Amino acid sequence: MKILAITNQKGGVGKTTTSVNLAASLAAHEKKVLLVDLDPQGNASTGSGVDKAHLKYSIYHVLINDKTLDEVIVRSEKGGYDVAPSNRELAGAEVELVNEMAREMRLKQAFAKLGSRYDYVLLDCPPALNLVTVNALTAATSVMIPMQCEYYALEGLSDLVNTIKKVRANLNPILEIEGLLRTMFDNRNMLANQVSAQLVSHFGKKVYQTLIPRNIRLAEAPSYGMPVLMYDKASKGAVAYMELASEIIDKKQ
Image (cartoon, rainbow, N blue to C red; front, side):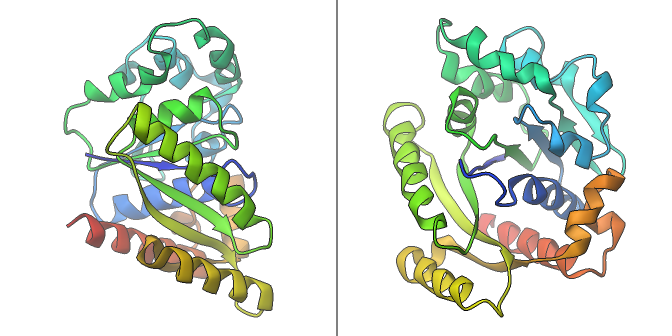
């Protein structure tokens, strides 16, 4: 079971878009997928067609040791994968866990009970380096960093890389950066091309070959509660995420 934390403390870089659409694309490749929504905004849940306003239980209940993942998981009928959903309750987990023992290990312990039921578990992390993100990094086998190719992107990246190093040293020795994903890419933009070239020269094969383009269909699909693959499978965004899924499957083999 591969557990992939999709994280970047910078907001608006396409973490949730990537989480939802990669989950659907891996499922379309006949992989068993669980998407775990770790953002209190719950956008990965709604983007998967889950009604976050009427959840009986959510990932919050798993983190505070109140419920198991099995009691929380629901099916994304439109996406063809399972979801451990989230809503605003999750914002309280940070405060409640502060004085708990082994608080960074809650998610890892929950996944241990899943066995090998899934091929891929995708963790949609919040846009912050907080306790929930540390739980994700402690539980993950590897990290995907979605980022826009713009000037400030490289600054935030160094903070995240340092956090990953600390988690690896203290909590999760197997954690590695699987790849950097260039999102919302516009090849007509000279700066985007320059930053992209910098990333490749610095990180080499850690940069995914697949580029996720700016695409209106990717932006529209969540309002219909479905991944772009179900909304418009011929769109550039859907094609790109299918290519990314293939690249990730090939890496694993």
